[in-house]
Length: 385
Ligand SMILES: C[S@@+](CC[C@H](N)C(=O)[O-])C[C@H]1O[C@@H](n2cnc3c(N)ncnc32)[C@H](O)[C@@H]1O
Image (cartoon, rainbow, N blue to C red; front, side):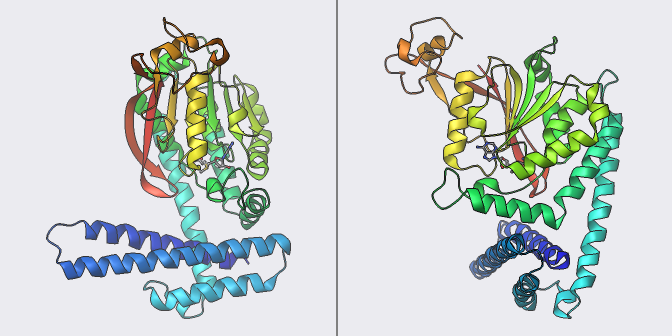
């Protein structure tokens, strides 16, 4: 079973790499019309193959969720992969009927990538200023444990089953709202480093401000925070299967975490979270539904303390958010009238008529860093005004 899943992962990676290369080629200057058309047709073909695999993998996972021994699940997935291998160069092992070899190669690559990741992490940690209370060994244990969990077939079976049971089909959130991805430690560190002194200002010296991750998945970003800067850290995650992974790692590292200012994971909807003591909020919003991103942005506009920072993978809910200065005053942040008692504490994003509009967030910096789904994901850092 696992071999089929690993082979599918390999085909997806190959298609994604080919798409990146083709898109770059398509942007090179001086291309003839015919070449551009050829590239565009190939991109469309690869995209439809990717869609096919995603559907086949989802069906495979859901079939296994219903019956863990369903042999037909792997047979069906291999059928889809073999058809693609016939058209896509670079999948000899599948074409020649050696899926176990391809799966073994994927396992080896993953192990080597994890070792690289850990080595890069240790180098980055060694370059941190001496007053940063980083716990390198526990971070390594956390990264190894979470990588192990996220690579297991069982993890993806549970994830697909929970999302399919609770969401889509007219529910509050779409299936795509729960696409899985992760961010390496070094990328997280790089993003926060670019915020510079704004970060220290936001978190304050007294340690009363919290570091919060909305959409905390299995806990990666939260654990990076508590084990690097020693911040009081917490995460909010709606899916119970991901929340359980985070809780599992906390249990594994109980002794090391006991010496920190505290780490907490809540399984629930971020729209119900209390953010009033946060200094830094990471929004894991790269694939959130538009409505969720907008509602999260509105909530931060109303409830986040002035000076706090938000890191967003999309910026969708935070950019261009203007409120009337008067409405900001209603939330207690600036002098002036307000929009009426009924709306106090609930910054009215539309009540600016006749008043001078002002932004709620200013963009501090934008940075690109590697994540599991892209070599150059944009991260945008905003400060609450
Ligand atoms: C793409 S993942 C985050 C991964 C993160 N960027 C990383 O690299 O570790 C987005 C997360 O948001 C969670 N999520 C989506 N809607 C949510 C909601 N309303 N409340 C809490 N979590 C939510 C999803 O379950 C998912 O785990």
